Amino acid sequence: MHSKGRGTVRYASVHAHLGRTGSRRDDLESLAYTLIFLLRGRLPWQGYQGDNKGFLVSKKKMSTSPESLCGICPQSFRHFVEYVVNLKFDEEPNYAKCISLFDGIVGPHPDTRPINTDGAQKLIYQVGQKRGRLIAEEDDEQPKKKIRMGMPATQWISVYSARRPMKQRYHYNVADDRLVQHILKGNEDGLFISSVSSSANLWALIMDAGTGFTAQVYEISQHFLHKEWILEQWERNYYITALAGANSGSSLVIMSRGTTYAQQSYKVSDAFPFKWINKKWKEGFYVTSMATAGSRWAVVMSRNAGFSDQVVELDFLYPSEGIHQRWDNGYRITATAATLDQAAFILSIPRRKPNDETQETLRTSAFPSQHVKEKWSKNLYLASICYGRAAS
Image (cartoon, rainbow, N blue to C red; front, side, top):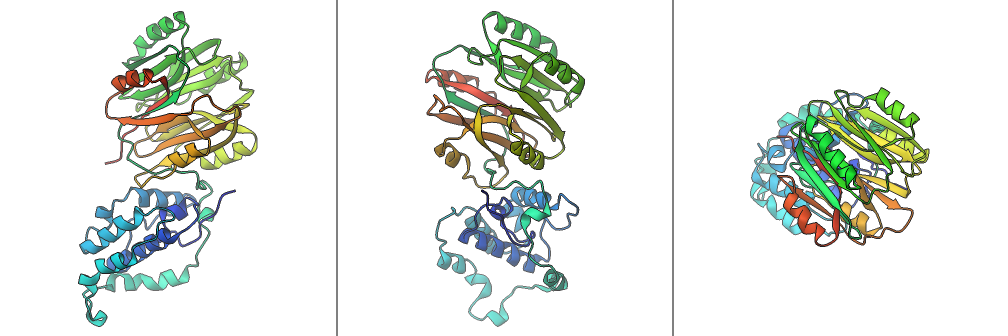
């Protein structure tokens, strides 16, 4: 189903790390890293060890800007990197343009070119000792063709789906002790919580009349997540339908009756749990909600979730081309979460053809209250929301 990238981790293109089918842009990206290595003698993502090496290298590669990567190189190198990482999959590179970038450096006589590679010569023999390896073997947690990269997650990320007219309400900057009054008032008006998030240790919640739930319970806990309480609610036929984590490490978990779920499992981890998700997919589970607290992830997966397929699009600081392609193929964003430097989107294909022919995403520095009202006027309703800040 998914292609596997081959190549030496140090020089592999980002798309190769992600298991995407290679094209001409990937060869040029690898060439850029090789040239910079020869010039500098080192790349910023060298030195990682252990089972998680592949993921750490890819993450560092994605978050290193061309300016930082080429800081001590002639400007031509930065221009080259910027050009190749923005190429589309099937775009034919302008090779003449690429070559012309280096005319001023190489000059007409290559033998006298003013490029000193002495720093790299000491490491060249080590490279020769290493065979090209399958990227996926570097780290079982590596995602395979399930990742989006795009703008830094520096703000509120909101997702809107087209729905029949219904009542929806939002609250944000809610302190722990104010949560109950909003929830009780919403319940009185026939609304249940459909999505929750956290910013600056305050909560945001979306309540609407379209959840289909019949009852709901929630808990704020100093734990991320409070296992005993969740187990107790599972015994009462409640299932996790929304959750959020605060930077302080606390969590808000919403559990509901009236879902289609038959069984649930969740995992809390320090890195996004690709390996666990893949394992659960094979067992018939699908991701139904997720959250972050600081750099930690919590992912909830459910059986009988109403999906026929699902993928993950993980958003790093890198050019994007994922989500719109997924939309065109019938996927819809069904969960979102973000850490300090990553945002994850879960996209699923509903078993029943969705009523919405439209889904939109929006990024705003402040909570998008004005935008929500504009969307409502077009029968677009908040489907999920999360908050993330980019690494400095």
